[in-house]
Image 1 (cartoon, helix red, strand yellow):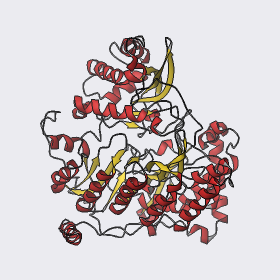
Image 2: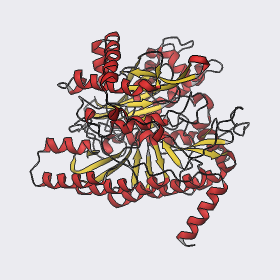
Image 3: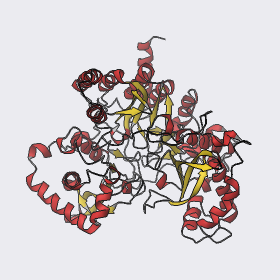
Image 4: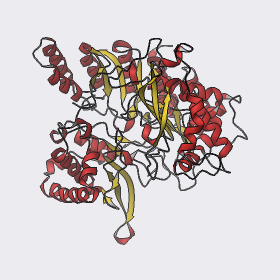
Length: 621
């Protein structure tokens, strides 16, 4: 069949299913920036730009240094709000084959990364992205990074309104804005759909849409804004600025916060120059007053031309998408029991689909292994978006998966079959089996352990054991980082791990510090450190914890609830506290002498002797 006939057939099928026409090209990128980058690379190669100056430049343009190899880059693609079209997915597939390693990586901040791109090819990748409307500008460096928005925004039954246009407008406003090109450190803004989703309490600025009753009973839109959150070697939960911030004060609030950080942030000590340290050291009450005062100054001095750069209306989707009915949400088919040996489609349906507030439509999650997806899989994903999503786009998620929204319930089996042709129909996306792992030693200079591979091993083992079918484990999360930094978001996991190294006997071993009881939900809790676990005993330790939970839980108690109870020292059985957990795990995590089992002292994905080798990090410019 010819390409034109295939396109005609696909368009006809899409129209029959009520799928909207493609979204207009968002035009985040600029052609001139690709040429500028190529010229700077030549000057750097000629020795006319110092290494430090060039490093700052390339980070500002989204090119992060690859592990221990200066000639290669990780190209980080900004995906504002995580929203990506089928055309953009296909473009990334082509670029990954032409200039990278034939695959892409979804990060925990809704970016998409291409690894091991030769420095001279970075500008060509940027050029291809511009054609598809994407950019790498300010994906790294001391800037406002990719603006996140909950992948449930617009379809969440608990949201006051769709925050997506506001997130897009803020992203537009700060992109290339002179006021945020040389901040003390990176700055992160997250929009939620409700208090449960969007990671709003662990961002520099987190915003949750809300409404209140105004004059004559009219509903007034606004946000509940949290400031000063963040994850890392020292993590903090954000503070609520005020009960209600009306929508017409959102820009001024964000500008005021960024300006204060720019003015008062620590530019001397890189280990303490994120805004959360400024808030902590200033004291919340004082910082709160500073923001409110600065906001007044912003409102009184911002020109109309500057304010017009923030345009929510222009970011609204003007196409006709299905509206939410006044009736209850659609329900999934109910099964008496979903097991690992049952029908594969039913297992997938149980763990990878969520009914939307729009009647008859579902959000479908595509399970990836620690965020990795090949070029051929990206193309199948793009075809599925075109043929089955009424909004014609996908959202990537902080769990390193893809969410395809507005899929009709009647199309779910066909959607599953399409994914299965490319190995994308694994179950477990919304369960404990979908473990998060940063890139670790596969590409990062700061990483000590291969967290990326460990996350994949956890997922493989958990799916093999069918843990995705146990609803009592569904609310628990496993998140893994390759160092004490927070790319894997281990501090907000039910069971989190960050990489390190330990001497056991006369040998070095990759190890992880295990944390318990973290959550990014309504309350926002940071995990408590429990103990160090050798890399090759992490899976055994988690399975032992699940075994203890199953023998200790009370009726109706989930794994996450049990873990939180133990963290508080309120266990009711033999396991009453973290100390009891630690004592129970000691026999499980012991390693034999290296002579007896050399592999136990190697990291995942490596046959070589383990060494804790790192280089200069590039989290900041």
